[in-house]
Length: 336
Ligand code: CP3
Image (cartoon, rainbow, N blue to C red; front, side, top):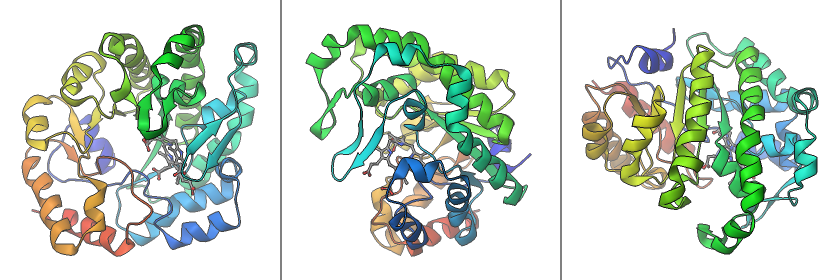
């Protein structure tokens, strides 16, 4: 059992392991070099040699306890027939959702389309030190719906008119996507992933009266599936504020990533009973050595006697200097 699994399964608090969301990405010059000659992001995710190489890049530089497979939550909508483009300053843009096309998908077609991801996991597991975890992931139902139906306006607010207009599409996806998400999870576990993280990045946009239906129930279905496959599972329902408590009560994941708006003291007192992960604002990594050590030590102190995996409250930013990441990891590793 590696240190991440130990924390998630045995709830051990003797050491604090560390990995970072988006640890493979644009802040690394070696990533930018590969990215420059691979302008199509989806194609890059489907190049198993390159995606495995990118997954391993941060592992060579830093003493991280887990690698996370280089892929994207939008590979599932892609596997189900939507095209996915990344437009500068606009984020991902998907082709319009077609109910008939969506309903005609089969397990075999879907798995074949995403096969390079599973190959990349196999290749990475072979090269990765046994003491290191290999994390795979999926986007949760609601967050995928937001992208599949384009429900977000600029500035990250929900387009309420569209939400109402698209209710039949929302219900269709809610009812049917779980099947494909569980296939994707199972394929990743079979390929060698030993932890699964479920990203519900836009959980904070869900109207209160829909939280149960759009967030808790779909996340619980995925968590139960991963647990039934004897694999630890971490949830990241970003933006839920105090509702993190109800999420934990209902969904019961092995690990729960808190975002940077959650007060860590509140989390320690109110989110007991699971292994917590993350929290520190990624913007701290844009400052200096002193501030990074101060802020990381704050989290380490607060979670000293409870099961905790060090991570951030959201993904790494492209502007972060890799030397600051080194400072952070050293601080976590040397903390007693
Ligand atoms: O964490 C890792 O290192 C593993 C790889 C990973 C990526 N995306 C690679 C990526 C993971 C775990 C994700 C998850 C993901 N993707 C989420 C959930 C986490 C979160 O950020 O809330 C979401 C919402 C997405 C959808 C997505 N993909 C967005 C919003 C973007 C950024 C668009 C932009 O222009 O910045 C992507 C692209 C993406 N996914 C990049 C990377 C490294 C940047 C690609 C590039 O331009 O080089």
